[in-house]
Amino acid sequence: MAWSKYKTEYIDSDRSPAGSLWVMKPLWKVFRFFCKTVVHRPVTILYPYEKMWMPENYRGRPGLRFDRCVACGMCAKMCPTACIKLVETEDASGQKVMRPQINLGRCAMCGYCAEYCPLDAMTVTPEFELAEYTREDLIYGPKRLAYEGATEKMEIHLEQTLMSDIKNGNSERRISPFKIDRPVLDAAKCISCKKCEKVCPVKAVKMVEHGVNEKGRPILYPEFNNDACICCENCVEDCPKDALRINEVL
Amino acid sequence: MMAKNDIVYDPDSHLQTDKMWVIMGPQHPFSHGLWTLKAQLDGEIVTDAEPIIGYLHRGWEKECENRIYPKIIPMADRLCYAASMTYTHLYCMTVEKALGIDIPEKAKYIRMIGDEICRIQSHLMWLAAVGTDLGNLTVFLWSMREREFFMDLNVRLCGARMTTNFPRIGGVRNDINDDFVMYTKRCINRFEKAIWDVISLIDDSSTFVSRMKGTGVLTRERCANLGITGPAMRGTGVDFDVRRDDPYDNYDKVEFEVPVLKDGDSYSRYKIRIEEMFQSCKIIMQALEKIQAIGKNAPYRLKVPSKVPAGRAFMRMEDPRGESMMCLISDGSDKPYRLKVRSPIFVNVSAAKPLVQGCRIADVPVVMAMIDMCLGETDR
Image 1 (cartoon, rainbow over the protein chains, first blue to last red):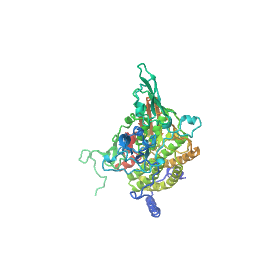
Image 2: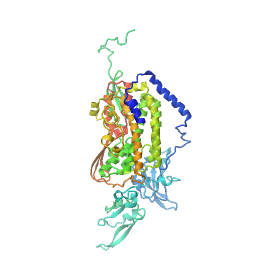
Image 3: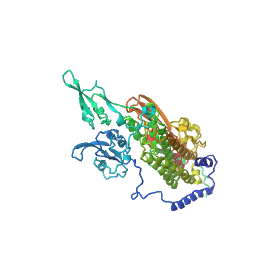
Image 4: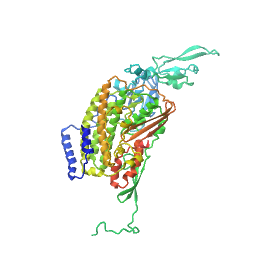
């Protein structure tokens, strides 16, 4: 075994470096290595002409699938360098929509935007040659962020195991928190302002009438469509009275 | 011609010379990173020295107080670029301890593999630096070549070469696949043969061994008083390794040896690090077998609550450079109240004065290279 060889020959033995011929040993080693490299294939590649092989989940610049995105802002929220901003743009039918824009001069290529995207609209891409002449060119708009040929492995899924599942012996189930965490309403605090309905990017919130108050005005409480909800927490953050919270299933 | 030592020493004559302060750094070939060593010279002999750090201070700990817990993970990567996964691992362990959760076995082994890959790659980076400090550029090139294979393993593991961003609170980012297992085994088997090229360049050459042997001697007592940890401490005869003596994750379930040498000079520190690389190979191979025994569908990442209960948590781990610790104080919100980092090099650099005192100025780069400076974690 290699580890025992170093221990016995170098660490435990009392070697003296005084022998002058020892200088020749490394020289001989280098010469042998030279002969080896003449025969063997090179360890380097001709970089600009040849590219290194990259695995599919290589974290280059972020990519965006324009059609899948619903502008929930999860990527902007999770970005550790705050380089993502939602900007107004036009989609294929000419409608004004919000989509992420990324300042790649700040991007740390951590892959959080792809990991925390509830709809897998953000992906990681294998593109890493991002040099530009000006700093403005480093800002990638929503259209420029598109990456041709984004595969399924490039969308990093958030696959987690619940602690309760492990206790129940169901440890093979993987689930994304965006599928199980749902907002809960504290009805006593709600003032029926409809803000949650307005900010919901997937229209999963519906204000439902629950009778009238003493002034004769209707009392509206939000109701959540749990299938459509993606747990982006926009309603929780925009609620003026903190009536909503996310119920974390653990 | 007069003999060389045939002079009359007169302290009042004009031959009397002052001691000279030589400022080495922050931009200096000897300082790997941004730091300064002020050395007082009496001729060739260093009589006094003072390390100055702080050129890379970025307010890391303060910055963490404004971030939610998962967002600190990419920042912890950037504490030390040579061994990024160890600090991320340490941060995740600290938060897990504060949460009071036990992560799946598989995640522990995957983290262990990542840690040991980082340890080998960090030691190879150190070996490359030592090579240039000794004046041997071949060592630099060859150990950088070896390091490249471990970088490729990092890419396969997590999709990035250096800033891995791989451990998560409650597990790891992604599972390993069969390809990774195969390539890791192949890489380790290859490395155990190829590293002998580098070893024979340095250990078998009297030129380099005589420059390391007997220089920068640190006694065991001095080492304890200065609080030095890591290979520099084990080179002086202190038999302590956090992995073995205070095991975290699953280090108590794998077999490995902790190399200890009693000489306390630069050469013993060198030998300890080389031996540690072999031991890391041993750990990786064992952990791979354990992962395969656990099975493919075992959980690797737990869902954890976003808020950490109020209290304090403290963890320590064996970094490639020494013992790193983190102390987390949380106030029950989703951001830490305080995150204190104890980095090994911040303490080890205080040994600069006792290490270089008495040696020649030409030996200073070699002596300080054996500390394996990393300024990212020191200044934070």
